[in-house]
Image (tube, rainbow, N blue to C red; front, side, top):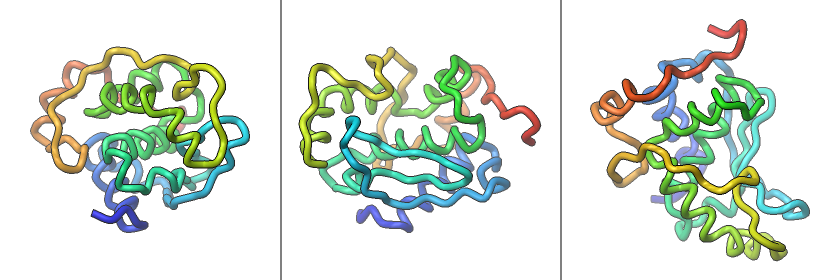
Amino acid sequence: MRRDQEWLDDAIAAFDLLYFEGALALIPTRAKWHRFSAKNGFTYGDYLEGRIRINSVLASEEIPSYVVLATVFHECLHAVVGMEHDLAFELAEARYVHYTKAMLWEAEHYDRLIARVGTSSTGVALRRGRPPKPRLCAGDDAHGLAPTDRAHRVAPTLPPMPRRRGAL
């Protein structure tokens, strides 16, 4: 499957249905592929005022879909929860069904990602500056998204999704 604009839009729509209970549909959120500079390391994506940008390196079919989707999910969380990476944000991020697998893949392949954007890393650099933590991770499927029934079985074991103050 080609990772294009439609693929990003479908990923956001699926996450809205499976994880955000329609909250993303209420926030004008648009996503696009973006070419980031590697000046300060590899940037997976960012979120600002309803705009999600995902590193175009991740559009490659060589990158597992669950890794790309972990980045999309992370940026969607910023739209719903806010910009701070506090404990509530980390717990919400861990709800993504392939979180652990994605963090482990990123830790193992970070240097190759840096090389793809034209620079090399120094030392051990992991996503958001910390090693992956063990998280609940259900079985795999073709798109990296949990079927609704699996998501509902997992959800009761996790705390509720936090909401930004004054939102919804």
